[in-house]
Image 1 (tube, rainbow, N blue to C red):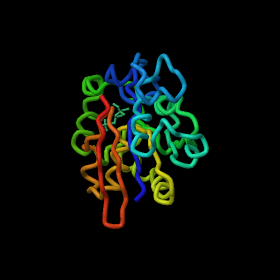
Image 2 (image 1 turned 90 degrees about the horizontal axis):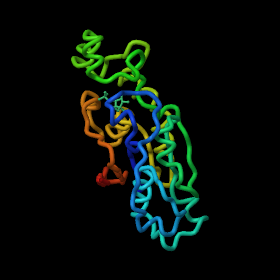
Image 3 (image 1 turned 45 degrees about the vertical axis):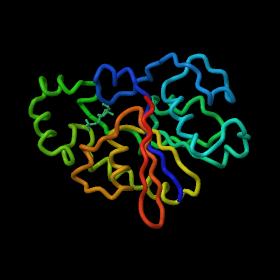
Image 4 (image 1 turned 180 degrees about the vertical axis):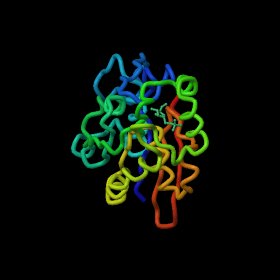
Length: 218
Ligand code: F6P
């Protein structure tokens, strides 16, 4: 069985402020270098999901004995084109990385950069329509969940063709859709599924079905 690991980017400035969309950087945090980092670059300041990525690699490797050629073939890292996912995977060297526009977060159109409270206050009809049918609701000049699901098709085809484990570092709406696809969940559940920050969802596609494990990182 070949695992697919789904994880959101590290916490961003906008996550902290409750703003949706945008292209914010990660919130920097000072972390104690973990055991894993002893074999890697001595990083003083690391961004929080860099650490997550290291942790999620643990099931695959004994980091103490890792050699570069092995690492190159062992794992692929896919991100969106938004800096919060790229930065998340940033300092982890030695693995092939691909940026996919199709992994970018749902486009909130005219609501990009707003908080849910601001949308409710300034655009109450939009807020209500989304609440009524979150799956089909399309942000003005933006996307719906159905749009996101459609644009993920090439990503899913590639994911299914991969022989190496893939780590997908993406965003809430996109990961809901990917997760639902691989775990065979109904469309209507997608916009409401739990894909929290600081969590790695490991999905193993075996012949007898799908196995799932969640790693909480904070
Ligand atoms: O709040 C983080 C975020 O990734 C936003 O950028 C995005 O609009 C939102 O989550 C998607 O979640 P929901 O569909 O529940 O609003």
